[in-house]
Amino acid sequence: MNFQLTRNAFGRLVLTTAEGAVHEGVVPVRAFALTAPEEDIALVSAEGKELVWLPTLEGLPEATRALIREELARREFMPEIRRIVAVSSFATPSTWTVDTDRGPTTLVLKSEDDIRRLKGPGSLLIADSQGIHYLIRDRRALDAASQKLLKRFL
Image (cartoon, rainbow, N blue to C red; front, side, top):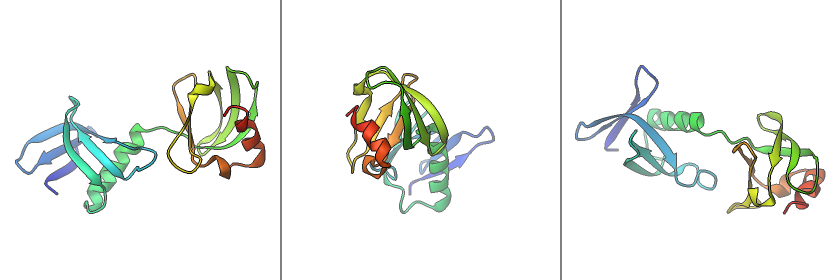
C-alpha cells in the first residue's frame, strides 16, 4: 500500500501519498457497486481526479478498509425490496407499496423502462420518480405474490 487514509476533525477523508502529497475530501467510488461492491474502487480527489485505484479491498489494513466502507455506506442509499405489497395500477405511472430492508415505503414507477435488469441471478434496479434506486437482489427469492405483481411490469 503506497498511501495512508485517515479521517480529519471535520469527518472528511484525507489521503497521504507515499511522496507526502496530502489530499483532503477524498471520496471512494465503486466501479461496479451492485455486482462487485468490494472490487474496483477509486479514491477520487475533491476535484474529481482519480488518485488511487484499488482492484480489491483485500490486502488493505483493516482500518483503511473500515474507513472506505464507512464512507461508501454514508454516500450510497439503496434500499433493498424484500416484498411488493401492492401496486395501484398495472399501467404506468403506478404507485407501489413495498417492504424494504429499511422499512415499508411507497414509490412511484413512472415507466417500465425504470426497471433495469442487472448482471447476476435475477437482480433488478428500480428507479422511482424521486430518483431513489431500489434493489431487488434476486426476484426469484421474492414471495409468490410479489413475483406475480412484478411479472406484470417485466
